[in-house]
Image (cartoon, rainbow, N blue to C red; front, side, top):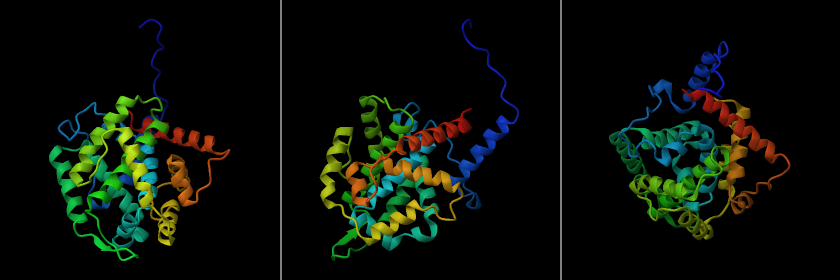
Length: 288
């Protein structure tokens, strides 16, 4: 067409590099030893092609930063923290926990409807077996709708925050509300209640939950493990450090303060630029 530049041939080796990079990234999220393969995007899933949730959840770097931010928020709730502390192998297998969470998100977002519902059913069965006593003597259950609501809220808000920071900063409000409405299906199916359907509702719910949050030595220990990449994580240590800094940067100011994280400083723009650059490289690797 007139006025367009001719498409140049790919540089020698670039196709091989893209393939190798994509394979390396896929290996982080799929346990090849257990026969896991990447989830293939289907057209008969819970969400049809063109859904906002499929767009948001398909961006690797913003989802990783958002996922870490969600965990930092979740651990501020004493009962959610206790469930991880009492029943999780996070010290020995943090990467496995992160990988399983990422796979659940992929299955419920892109998999066949039957596979997505089966994944939700498995998680609900696991939650039904998790219960205990808090240090103050209060009992907790992982299938408590209010606890599931907090987990859902932190994930929805953090995933969207990551997407807006590193992919679509000018995302219109009606699409942000569509995202909350779509991801609400998963939260409700898992047993969460209440589940926000709009961005404003999510903000109100976040503010209403703040009085229940706290920090203790267990919070600090789990936070430290999360932010210092375990040796078993099959990625680059510097990349993981960049992602954790990006995650902290996504937190609301009050959550940063509760964790004792410093305020954004002169290096913040460089960290954001580095994360954006990483996101673009990963998108290039998976672009057909």
